[in-house]
Image (cartoon, rainbow, N blue to C red; front, side):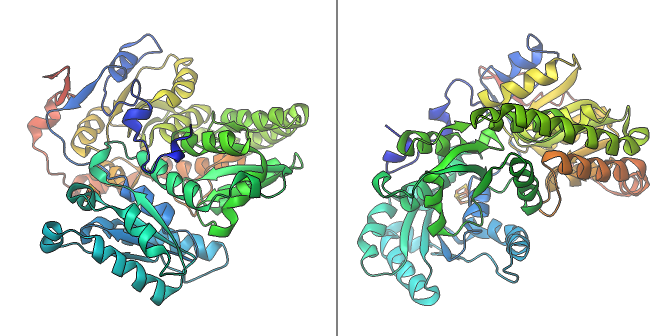
Length: 493
Ligand code: SF4
């Protein structure tokens, strides 16, 4: 039975109970080292400073869908991250030929009276109003924490309201309190879209034997989609990217593809398993095409599955040759420099492999969580026998600041919150991911190396920031063990 047969998605804690751990720390010295013991033991924190609600990435995906209204059912503050996401939505739409199109999200803005009396009626009215005002193809009725706590039934409201509106209403269960793993966001969105937009198997489109589904939940921009299309195009294959920026009517094409491939295993297992079980589309969920070797493995995997392994190896060999000669110009700047990476589990590990290929030394990695999908990347890094700090934290900037102040890397790669911490410590900070830049494939490796060389080669701006910037921590915190707030088995370390 598929997870999607359930009305409510299954959270990560239940799907991967042995390995989906929120917190860990330690030094990584290969698979037998202390690092692995740390991440494979159950741990928590005696103090936690901040974390990311699954709504943040979930809204990022949902707001990108054309002809769709995202109706957030919850406290009005729940959806505010959609405003921050809007830059990506606007840029993504402009790149795809629809400039000026913003994210379209509304909120039922539940208040104290709704908490007492229930919010079902308010949701039904808001759905009808959204349908009247915007005439979308789809309305995503998204539950935040509050409806989950007071017992609103978004599925029943959607079913009862459906006959009064033209749009298709899809309930999305994204109550932040249910899972500590931000990655649950991908599951809840796939759950809603898979249940609501995919066809009955008997009505699926005719098979497209040369088409490969490439899953993109927002971890790559159009430049990356073009690069991966180019690479698979060299094998005579066509690509079908989904779900971001995909028209609701086009989801059914995924059922006809010959193969599905993930670009980030953390994101996609929920939906790829469903595509295989329900529509017979096989899948690969192994490598992130970031870096020279990873990209080669990703392309060869597709080639092998499509009966084109020799052709894929030839493409990889030609592309690697060209890239290696192009990367030569950055070597004098990057070789021997130290780096700290801070991002989602898979991106941080795959990017660490790329940085090693560029000659940098990894001194630390902080990832949002750790689960079984990271093991392939961990094994690749373990081969280098490097010793680096490995911190598993759903943000926790106080810990990151302490680690960075101790390590003082030559460059920090992270998302905006980590970058601001690093910059105020005087450490050159390179944005880990920006949907306007290339990141994946061979072109992405070159693009990242070029930006990195510029950052590492000109550290003075950050040095000055470090002299004048401040973080809110006392000097005594920097002298403490950064992992002293992590408890194992109930006791603080
Ligand atoms: S944790 Fe709950 S209340 Fe907070 S933003 Fe997420 S859904 Fe809203």
